[in-house]
Every structure is written in C-alpha cells, then in structure tokens.
Length: 147
Length: 349
Image (cartoon, rainbow over all chains, first blue to last red; front, side, top):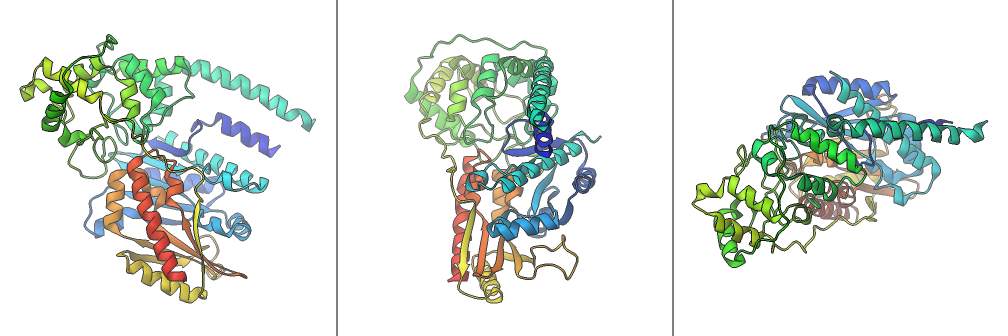
C-alpha cells in the first residue's frame, strides 16, 4: 500500500515534473527560509546533521558572496543500514540541500537519484531512492509555499 | 482487495492529472511559477536564467521563438528543454510572459537574409565578440546573478548554441541588433554607427557559426563513485589524505565521523570518517560558472573501514554534472574528478 501512496504523492507533487534537479524559489528571505527548511526536514522525520557555511569560508578568504549554505540531513538507522550494505554510497550521504540567497529571495536545490539508479537493482534501495526524492520534494515545496 | 489498489489509484491519478492539466493549460501564471520562476524569477527579473521581462526582449521575441526555446532548451547552457509541456501549456506560458508588456509579440517572415558573411565576421569581431565570445560561445556563468559581484549584469547568451539557432529567425536576430536591449549591455547597433546593411551581414555571419560542436554531455553511465582501496590502516590513510590534499593547494576544513550529528556523541561509528577540504579560489570560480554547485560542496573524501580493508571514496563529479546541463560546469567537474583521483591515489598507494 505504501508504495502506491508514494507513487500518488510523486505524481501529484507540486515540485513536479521529471526533474533531475529539484529546485525551488522561496519568497522568504534567507534566514527565514533557512528556519523553515530545518523545520520541514524535521517534520519529515529527518535529523539535520550539519549546516556547512560555504559563504563564511569564501568571505574569510576575501571573496564576495551572499549567504550560501549546505544543509545535511538523514535518519541514523536508515543511513547505517544502507551504508553497511552499500559502503560506496556513503559518498552521497547524508542527504543534502543547498540553499542560497538571491536578493531578498532564496533558492533551494537538491538532486534526484536518477544518476545512481542505473548502478543498482535492489528493490529496497531503489525504494529508498524514491522515498528520498518524495521527501526532498515535499521539504522543498514546504519552503516554497511558506509566506 | 489489495489487488485492486493499483487500478483504483491509477484511475484516481489519471483523473486528477487530466483535470490538473486542463486547469494548468488555462493558467500560464501557474505554469510559469512551476517551470520557469525558479531560474527566471517570479516577475521575470532573471536569476540563474536571463531576465524575461525586459521591454526590448518581449518586443522582439516572437511567439515562435519562445515556443521553440521551450521545446529545444539550450543544450549545455543550463536552460532545459520542456518536452513534457503540451502545446496549450506552452501557449499559456507565453501568454503569461506577454502580460508583462503592453505590446503584442511580433511575427517575422521566414526568409533567410543574404548579407556578406566575411564582412559580418569582421563586424562581429569588432563589436560583439567582447561579450559574446570569439566564436559566439557566450559569456561565462549563468543569466543574472544577485548573489555575487561580477562584470556583466546579464551574461551574454551563446549565439552558437544549437537550441538558440534552431529557435531564432534571421529577422528576429536583425530586429535585436537594430533595437538593442535596454537593461543589458547589448546596445542597438545604430549607437555603434552601424546600419541596416551591417545587420544583414552580421546575421548572415551568425548563421554560419559552428553549431556542429555540440556541447559535450557528461557521459551517462559513468560510475557514480570514485573509489580506492588503501594499502594502509585507517589512521595512516587519513594522514596521507590530509597531506595529499594540502599538497594540491586545498585546505582541510573539517574532519568528522560519518555519523556525527546523527548519532549521539560517542555512539558514532569511529571507523567511518569524512574529510572536508576546500580551495576557495577554485570554489569561487565554480560558483561563478554555476551558482548551483552547492550539490558538490564541500569537497569531501570519506574513509570506510570494512573487514576487507580501508576504502576511500568521493562522489564522481562527472557523473553528478550530467544533471546540470552546463558545459562549462562539465569541464570544472572533469578537473575536480582528476584531482579527487590524484589525491586518493597518492594517499592509498
């Protein structure tokens, strides 16, 4: 039953289309969008493991940039299980969403797992890819529609 | 009962999708928000994509040009093709773009202009190449950027792009040259002392640009992970990696357990370690090429100890790059791929 519900959500998700990159524009300012993003990640059952402040390193090195962060997140048991079975996938884990300011709006970006699918045939793993894609879309859409 | 669930859901989905499609076809604003606004801005001011709400752009862009652009995209220049949009949906989006202007879209004759291409080439080199590149390959970077300083407020489009060439007519090119585009560095050629005959020569030359060199697509099927087996134990491999990273002008910015931040402190698996590193000059260049490179960041190599030994691995930037439709980014990813390999090879052999 669960997989059909996931299919339904995927088909009707507002962050729709056969995208390879999931990208949304939020009309929230960067700090507000960042707050909503972290809330949305938690609401979907994930834990934020780290926020990498790309802009800080750049500006400390003398380069100019607006706010730019990468938010890492995951579910411990799921990540342990998958990295035990497929150690090479740790390179793509935890999951991540890049978030950067564009004037007084904010762009958020993540990727599908389309580029990984051809290399794996396990139904469980492919289901995890699909679930992550659904959850990431939902998280991004939550930030996009927030006013 | 469960046997029928797919059927029932299929019917529900089909109904909802068809109703949604019908509603969307009539709602260009909604379609624009879903498909275009993330790059071109909610009001068409631009962003990762070029601005679409410029008066001069809307005055010279024909519906046929906009329609073909949505269909063809710009291979290797970020703008994707939208083959999934119906004809009605494309028309609705174009209708929404037209709502930003009080003039109707022009129509152009399909005729080919017969100027003098050699003369056009000379004119192009004198007046256009500084922004559009010697071969019309366009400027470096994406449409507009609001997040970083740069020289050009709007990046010059690639005139040799096969998607552009397939979308634009000779007459539209000429109209653009004669009118210019206020709000961008593109002047009317009249302000440069050129005349209509010069526009014909330029257009004829532009039609001869080498569009046969289609952008290299990052090869699908590339392994998603770069992986090496270490000849050393975990601790020594980590030290070797740090030395190899620093030796290539990268700075180690962080070393942490793979599960840090997810597992309670002290309960992380200590035999899985992530090493983050950065070369900020390289990062700055990469962000100038494409602000979406956050998905590659920060540079990272992960060490995993298994019963078979120590594996070191990273994402394969060449594999990930295929999602971005950006030829310039493909080149940077090739460079990063080679660096990852060099670092891991040095640290493990």
